Every structure is written in C-alpha cells, then in structure tokens.
Amino acid sequence: MQYAQFVTIGRETIQSIMIIIGPVLIAALVIGVLIGIFQAATSINEATLTFVPKLIIVVLVLALSAPFMISNISSFFRTVFTEIARVNR
Image: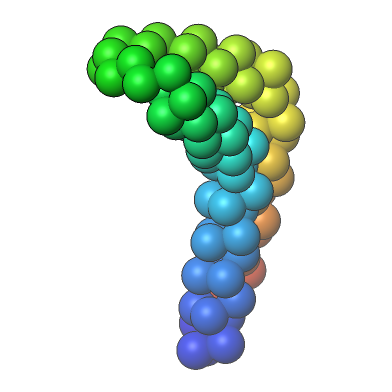
C-alpha cells in the first residue's frame, strides 16, 4: 500500500467521523448554550438543569439520525474493505 492510499483512508476516516458525530455534537452545543443563557438570565445554577435536557436531546438526535449514521458507517467500511482486498491482490 502506498503512502497516498494511507493518507486517503485517513482523510476519509476523519471525514466520516465528523459527518457521523456532527449532528449530535451540534445539538448538544446548541442546547448547552441555550440552557447557559437561561441560567445566566435567571441566576439558577442547578447542575441537573443542564444535564437532563442535553441527555434527552442527544438521545433524540441519535434516534432520529441512526439510519443515516448506519448507512454512512457501512459505506465507509465497504470502501475500506474494498481497498484492503485490492491491496492483497
């Protein structure tokens, strides 16, 4: 396997990870900022106020985006296994 193939697989790996986990991280970030603004405005400093809504939103986003994540992961692994099979020939 040539150096360029390693770089290509590494780049595709990082892109796939960012595409798969991006919606979950963005949802957690948005809900965290909104709750932080709410806590700053009302002076409520309760730890569970940030944890429970984030947990609910992250689980909801995971449930809604699971088909997209699975299809993306399976196409990525199909590509990787095809490259492995091509190298061994």
